[in-house]
Image 1 (cartoon, rainbow, N blue to C red):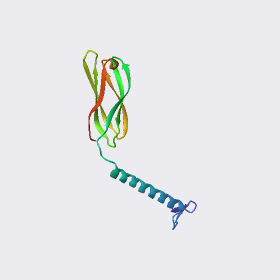
Image 2 (tube, one colour):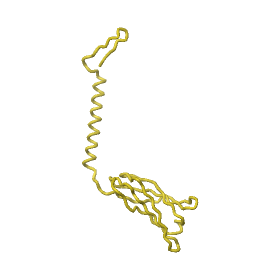
Image 3 (cartoon, rainbow, N blue to C red):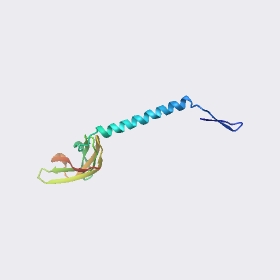
Image 4 (cartoon, helix red, strand yellow):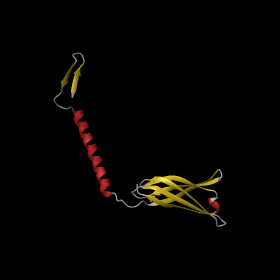
Length: 138
């Protein structure tokens, strides 16, 4: 450590580190070792199973000329999915089928992501089916 005397403008080097420097060094070393241990454990222990995607409908409402079905895309697996396509199918009372889809950029591991699908027909008047249709590995 360097000590500067402002009056004489001289610098004096102390030969031994102070207790603050030792404490800071030890705490920093412990934090780095803990971080390396955590990263190593994650790399060795986490399995690389396929994403487990499911849909939970959270609400329905009218939005202008469309009917909006709000949902959560749930990924319970420890792996991420990319470009997740969710397809909604609405069968009307007359047997007519309306299909709508949305694509999520990512479904992170062990996460919930919200989204919505729009239909022209009323989902409460027909039979609604929403499902994940596919994904890619990031």
